[in-house]
Amino acid sequence: MYILHRFILRELLTSFLLSVIFLNFTLMMEKLLRLSRLLSSVGASPLDVGQVILYLQPQLLILTIPMAMLLSVLLTYFRLTADNELIIMRNIGMPFRLISRPVMYLGIGCFATSMAMSFYLGPTGSVMLREKITNILVTRAPLAIEEGIFNTSFKDMVILVKGKPAPNLLSGIFIVDERKKAESKIIVAREGQILSETDALSFALRGGHVYITGQNSFTEITFGSYYFRLTPVLDQSNKKSSELTPFELISESRSNPKEKISYLLEFYRRLSMPGVCLIIIFLGPSLALIAGKTGRLGGLTIGLLVFAAYYSVMIYGENLARSGVLPHFVGAWLSFAMLGAFSIYAFERVNKK
Image (cartoon, rainbow, N blue to C red):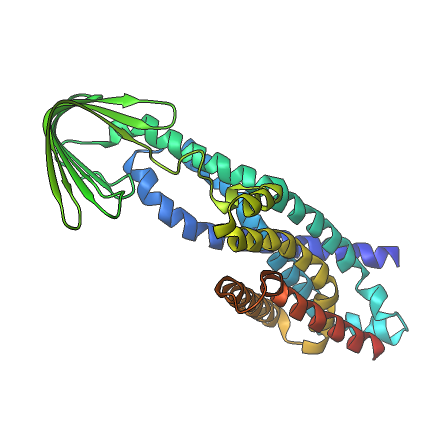
């Protein structure tokens, strides 16, 4: 029995690692496409891109570990069914609970890893990613601002310079600032200097005008010297939910009543995603046996359909919670409860056969 479990577990781990690589690569491409334009515009080095990819991994693994686990279980047990090995095990009297025990070992390991990603590594990676992008923009933006080319590296900003006598010296400066939705700002200056700070980029401009347009107002300011500070990404004090640990999410939900539901939904998601790994311990083997000899392609299709349905119900429940139709606890755990109930039912049904 030990040899048999070790054989199945080895195949599970191989399929799991391949599934993680495949899913991470697929999801990472979507995020990298959004960052590639920004990174390429400032001339990021291959080392910078490699660090960005590394910092993306913890957040991706929160999603891909449960998906990869289900795919690996389905692929492995579909293969056992297709080769009649699973049927032979049952015919010689081996209980289904014993046959699926290797999945329990994998599920416990995936649950522990997902909890580490959710509680610590994921938020830490998000913070390091933001800091890295900020550092890239601050240190390399002066090189990215070229003569006669519209620079859009910064969100809601357009920068155009006529001349660049030195890397940090500019002439004929034209800046469009639309960071404030209620008003637009146009800055025109004869010359200026780029000042790099720790977490921001600043322009010391000389001899120009500032034009500010609101909904019902227009303001023109003439200046001799003008200090313009530009923060490339979010302010350090204004973290995204993905950058907060679960304990910080609870704290923010208590101190910020207006965003309480959003913070709590994120907190529940951090708990439910690792918990899915425990559900798959029951769902994966039973689903593979019920589906029969559909092959590896069938396993991949069924696994993706299961998670597509799970995420759809999860998003629907969270939207109902945000709109006040359901209590936030019910909306957050609706998909988890439905998948858990179905998994236990399917497992018991197969186990009794």
